Length: 512
Ligand code: NAD
Image (tube, rainbow, N blue to C red; front, side):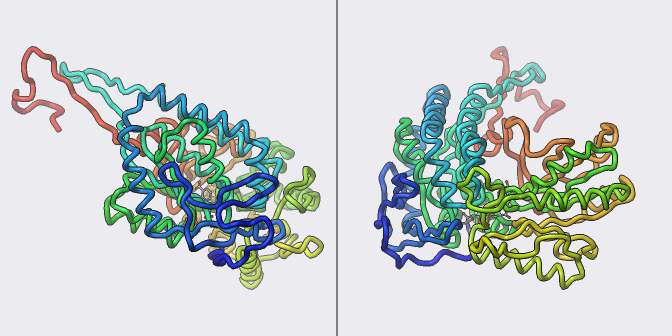
């Protein structure tokens, strides 16, 4: 977790207390509660990782703002929860229209705020934001609760709106990750309070503008800006909250789950990873290399990244040589440039955290193949793509999430060893297998402990599929009907035929 942002003292440039202009886009820096912009006297500085400039002075919410947002969201719940699914779906589609219409602005602000590549935001990340809304709008209308008749009765499942949903998300893809939870929660008929990441809080504010223009009623979507331990903790401990959807680190996930336990508030946790990337000798060498290099994407700040390359012994040396050559071709620089492949890390404290992992890996006896520090010619927050080999079994660099452009490589002798190495962490978010033997792919994937296994591909999936983590990588699955199962109160209604009351017939098979 990066350090807490500084309290705002800076009032220079285009910054005012309520609005700022970022990349020529006007962004409110206040909360959005009950259909109104709400200011806070306390504010925090939002620093761009591109040049470490303060770009916004953002409202710093706490207990009072959390209470106000929960009250507004509860007030709006009755109306939204009883709005016909078709109408809810239409509004979600209009939000998607608004995201598409403002794609360039959203991408520019997000890049300035979190330092990810502009070209990725334009081509895939922000389009996925729109898709999140469209997908769950359509999926809502396709929910089918009919069940087989049992013992002469008919049964019918409904996904009833549950109430106020708090969505807390990290900075590495702020709007995409938040809307992956906001869209199904709204589709399910819940009202939502988003607490954006304090290191990249701005696109949440633009989403509020878009939702209002799309006709989402006041109070159905709210944004409380602020620091995790303040605004986030206040929201997750509120008894008026029905669901908490949290994406972030394992440590914070534990805290959130502990807080939620007080009111038995259901939590869905999407947490960190240390995913294995297995390459067998029979794999397509070019495809495997191309995807292995992609594990440096977003400067390694990707929960799903396959940061542990596990390579069959017979091709190990050759693969490391080719991987090293390919890594040297990665172009680091300003994420707004089309030619840049790798941008900066999110904050100086995070850069120092990544450097700490690198130094400790060396001290533990791992051998540096390339990278291993800040890119001196770039300065700022750019860390070089880095590869370690020969790390001792069980050492920190093989077991802990770095969340930076730092990979390890390990050789394996056979399938059994590949699986043992792959499963040798407390994480279980994802795993990737490259092999041309599909029988082997099936044998291996059956033994991998992970929420998602990719075979000869990476980072692609149907939004109907379940997504989530095993072990410390999370609790629960979302996607398709799994999302509705979490955000809704799932109800089964059993209807006996009108001829007589079957519930008085004494012991029956299947009684609950
Ligand atoms: P983080 O846990 O520090 O923060 C995540 C969010 O939690 C932020 O919005 C923060 O304000 C909030 N928060 C902090 N303390 C809180 C508290 N006490 N109560 C409530 N909220 C609180 O994580 P991060 O550094 O922002 O993100 C990086 C982590 O997120 C990595 O571990 C990464 O793997 C994980 N991640 C997981 C997924 C996934 O889908 N599984 C996706 C992206 C990132």
